[in-house]
Image (cartoon, rainbow, N blue to C red; front, top):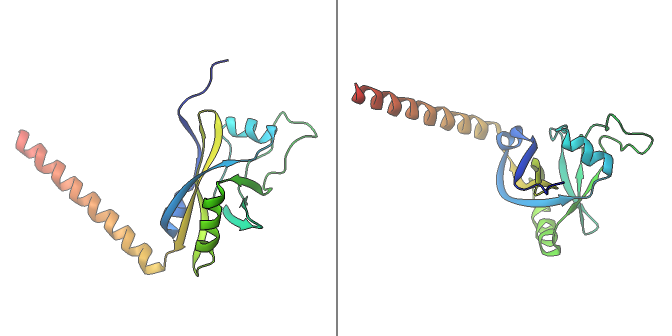
Length: 159
């Protein structure tokens, strides 16, 4: 069997970028069981309620839903169990200091396969206030309108 190369996206947390200011991102490995990997290869996972936490010098991923493997037997995994994140010691130490600050948290942004290995992109984030969310939405709409106006002007020039 040929070795996989490249990046294959499994799940993405789009709401995280809406609800949080992303300060820094980390690519982490995951400690998974066999049935979890098989379920991920079918493209089934949800990061919606997920968060990461540092306990006892180790990083853990909580509430990420990987459904049970349909052809699994009694060895199947529980869908929302906590999973260990694989990070370097220096990164974990940095995260311990940053997450103890008020309002900072770790949220998963994406779950994917990179060269055949399951990875999760975790972000150090700070929660947005309601007015920040409105401001971000307004900026996005302004950018869209500007792009539309530019493309319309270019079309008029061609004719």
